Structures are given as C-alpha cells and as structure tokens.
Image (tube, rainbow, N blue to C red):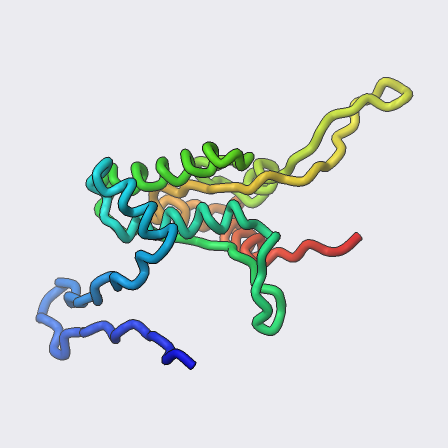
Length: 192
C-alpha cells in the first residue's frame, strides 16, 4: 500500500510580536504532485493566459469537475459522499485574478455542454433556493399555469467578498443563509 500523504504542518511563530500586528504564518508550498493528468493540462493551458496563481486554477478545476460529475459519482465513506465543493480564494480585496480564474472554470463548464446556473451574490436562503429551483410552466385543463419541477442544472455561486456574506447573515431575513448552504452541501436525493 502506498503511504498516505499529509501536508506539512504550518510553521507558526512561537513568540508573536507585541502590539496589534497579526502573527505571520508560513504556509507550505502547493505540492507539484497535485498537477497530474487533467489538472496539469488545465494548468498548462491557463498559465500563459493569466497572472492568477496556479493554486486558484487548481481550485477552479476541482470545483468545475465536481459540477460536471454531480451525483453520478460518489465514494462510500461509509455513506455516499458526492463531489460537492466550497472553495475560497484568499487574496486582497479588488484583486481581479480571483474572478479571472473562476471565469475560466465557468467557460469550461459551458464548452463541455453542461447547463450551469450562475448565482452572483447570496442575499437570503429563500432567494438562493429560488435561483436553484428548476421548473417548466404548463397550462392545465382549466387554463391555469402550473410550475412543474424538472431536474436542476448544476449551480456555481460566486461570493466575491466573504465579509459581505457574513455581514448579510447577521440581518434578520438572511440569518438562515449559512445553515442553508451547509444543508445544500450535503443534500441527499431521495428515491421516489
């Protein structure tokens, strides 16, 4: 059996500087072994096109691969675990490279023919669920229009500033947003 790989521990400064300054944390470098197969091809295609760090391309490809695989693939650990992902790009506010990396992922999904719901900004649990819902309208025998559910396309939600979402969750009408995201992450599709 191959030995398990685990990332090296973060090196935290033992004696933090005095004052209000943040303690510097030295993070490990992104492992070169991550750039295998399609991940390496993806990186090689994008590095000449943008200044976004390679790790952003890795996360974008991971998220898009999960969107494309959806619930057609799973791992039993011990229950089915599906390729649902949340990815966070941590960079200075206004850094355009975060959005650029995500735009390449969005384009990849479109070019392979995946229907994709793009959600820009999260305001409330109800608004999020409405955007995720898919339906068709059909007129019944009495002429009344009914909304009939259909399978929803994969969804990619952009949340440009995490601070804005956290602030939004403190508002009365949006307090359930984070629990809703958590439930959606591990949502189960029941057999009918």
